[in-house]
Amino acid sequence: MNRTDFLLARRTLLRAALLTGAAAMTACTSTPDQLRTGRTTPTPASGPAGSPRARVLLAYFSRPGENYYYGDRRDLRTGNTEILARKMHDLIDCDLYRIEPVDPYPHDYDATVARNVREQNADARPAIKGRLPDLTGYSTVVLASPIWNVRAPMIMTTFTDQFDFRGKTIHPATTHAMSGLGTTERDYAAACRGATIGAGLAVQGEKVNDAELPIRAWLQRNGLLQR
Image (cartoon, rainbow, N blue to C red):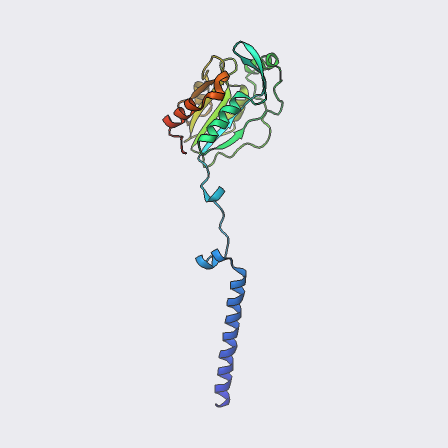
């Protein structure tokens, strides 16, 4: 072998060694999934267990404490509307957002009634505690609340004032003593301009603990039952 042939052979051997070392480094820094797919950069997850983001948001306001109960009063550790929201959440794939006031409503029933009357008369917008949800990606929003003096508490208007609901479907859901949906359908139609107001659900507060069947039937009728 002459000197030129020797140098060419040595160069080829060195190049092969460098390539082999690079391949070994790649193998050490890649995960098994990346090796199978050929991807070496992570991809973001789409949600829990790889599921897509829920398309239904259930936003609710609920008040524990002293509540009306068949003409009398009963102390509730969990408000009726929260019970309703949890039952819905058990049946459908949705995200929950609890609407909480910066200034909590009194534990006393009559004091809450008096405050609500003042807020309705003043067309007040009680402040909401914490960050508001991002409605991007939700096609349906269920707005759940009690009915106070024939309408949803004014904090629900505080909530609806914050968003553009165009292209979304809004379903009112209420717990009540005797007023059903109250004026929620009309109120949300005015506040959520551009939205479709879907059929609402009204559950008597005293019966909410045993309301699984009517809740399920309502979800089924409105195409929300996914499980």
